[in-house]
Length: 539
Image (tube, rainbow, N blue to C red; front, side, top):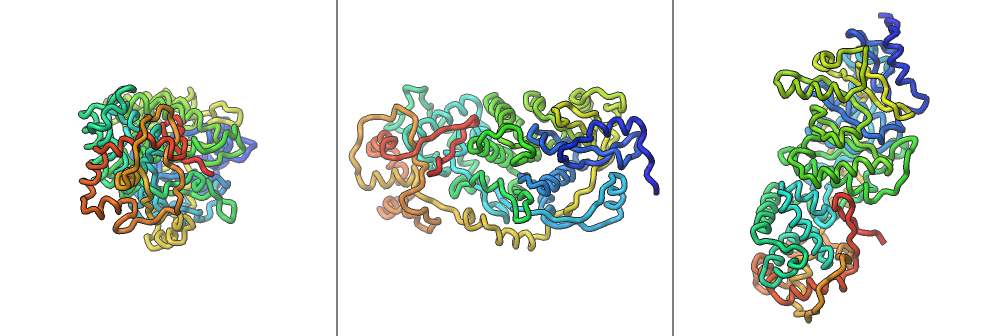
């Protein structure tokens, strides 16, 4: 069937997307239900670090849109990080199968569609899944993000920040859950209760709440998330031998019942990148694009401090060459302070079945530029699957005309990859040797137990300047976990249980002395970023 020539309106809309610079192809302009393949809708590649929003009700095609953008970014040499909550995005690694439906969509969008697979690195949060494990240390994760995971109130959050401040100042490395529990128990013990008195103190009631929350986190699998080897930001910014950007697909299906954990862990990755990457300003293409699926989980019940830091990170990370797309159901899921920074909008269909739905629809309409081409309030409830209302930033930073868009079909498999192929891909990953085996090196818990066992003499002065913390590389190479880790051997060989040894250590004068002197004997400075995260400085 011959293509209908575009109407004057369709031509006018498409003119707003006729960029000279490289761009990602979204699809074609639609008017009154008719798609015009030659009227193309696109996003300038250089504007991807101005961030974006992909929104729409369940089943309207958000994941396929994410897949479409990810494929083209990879082909353009831009690495991508995606949260794969249901496993659907694993199909990016395999070419799609031709079908009549795909052929029809290709005709509607003027797409010379060819199946293609892309380089995917499969990751798993804490190793809970088949991918390469992604972990963080407690010290690196920091108090603000941890407070979000633990669902603490503002008073408890400030107390947790005080605990981390003390650990940083005293040079106590917090690598996993047991390190943090040990420190909290010390700071509420008879020997340690005065340590924080001069800077606010820590009540036993608040400490008890935090300890109980940590136990709940551990029982829900949180112990796997914290520890070493810790993930390095550089391993997210890679290209393959053909120059295509590597897609880091963080497998979350094994932890989808822990939404607060995985959404906050994604934020840690972003904050980590922000603190490590240099300023680069505006680039021809971003260094990395990050997709936050189920973005509402980041913002629900978030503290004021968390939202302020998130807003500031989104605002500033652009200059590091990083683009962020939030993927959620309605724009109202994203706070106005963040929504105002998302220059690229792809809005799939919304529902208006309830008064709340109607309110969200009205809010969504107000976030778009005015248009005489469409009745947006009506259109947003009538969009078909794989259609969206689009406006992006042009090369000069101005919003493009609102375009009802029929989106192109992804070139990769729009389903889960065969598990055997995914397992094979993971086993062949160069990152598996680096991150695959957990490490339990000496940290706060083990060092304190060892000091007590050797009866080292006390030092009188308490640490007064923040700073040098034990997050350096150890003297000896870290060793994988064994049945009896060497750092715990002194107490356990003395016939004590782990819990008894900790209690004795935390209540002893030797421990008080060690905590006070740690800053002078352990060599590492802790500096914290906007989100309170910390990184080890590389030698």
